[in-house]
Length: 172
Image 1: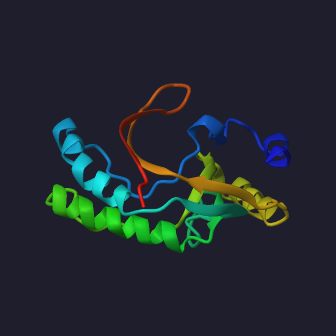
Image 2: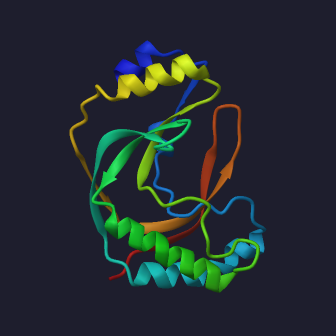
């Protein structure tokens, strides 16, 4: 990613620091603390049925893939086990706390790790970044997922701070 960091101004792009890299299987938004606690048995049950997942971080992509891109990310391959896990989490959340959160997501699951967000880039910069990533070569990076967690995100001037509310190791 260093070529992109050198080429494009930090004022228009926000790079995600490596300590904040993660895979979002389900975004819940703002929920009450009691609802978060109510998810622990459901998430633990999903994790207990899940074996560790080996994947590769591979290929730079823009998201959304159609329309106005706002995110540059590393794709994940294969993504079928993560997609299956995301569906299991959707079902567990719907069963555990349903109603306001429900068991529906607002867009299809795309396994990825966000590297950079474009704040207000304007059309020319967005097109330049999108063109630049088509020329990046990224060797596949092996990665192994051994647990799932529910994290709280707190905004700060330096970017979000994440803290684990629930951590469930995979058991199968």
